Length: 136
Image (cartoon, rainbow, N blue to C red; front, side, top):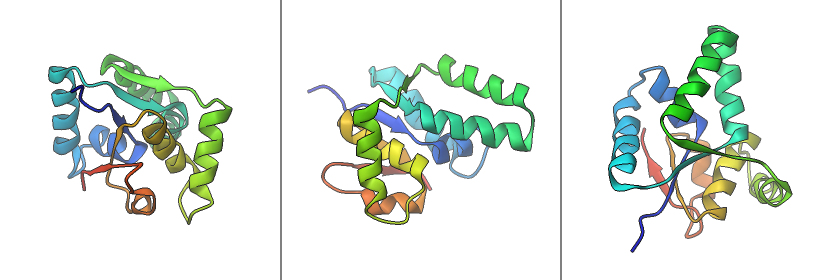
């Protein structure tokens, strides 16, 4: 049986890049995925969220470097077409969830992937359709 892909949300990746308490757990998930051939992915909306967070606190150049590192980590960027956007919007209707977080959940649902996060807002989308790997 093929292993389920993993969706990394911006919360998890910011924790990783900023060496927060969850960074080791996120790094382990990335390394295990590479070792076992599990696909890693992120919504481009979440990549944009990482970019603006780093650009705001550091610089646009540093943000560009982080995005380049995401690519080096072989994380596929999933574009937000209408089907994905509508799925994200459906998650948004269910509660007080940041819209960007809804895209992470939408990618997880669309690709039947596990969602890697520590963001408590995403507890609202955890279900048999979206399994969450908690890293907090």
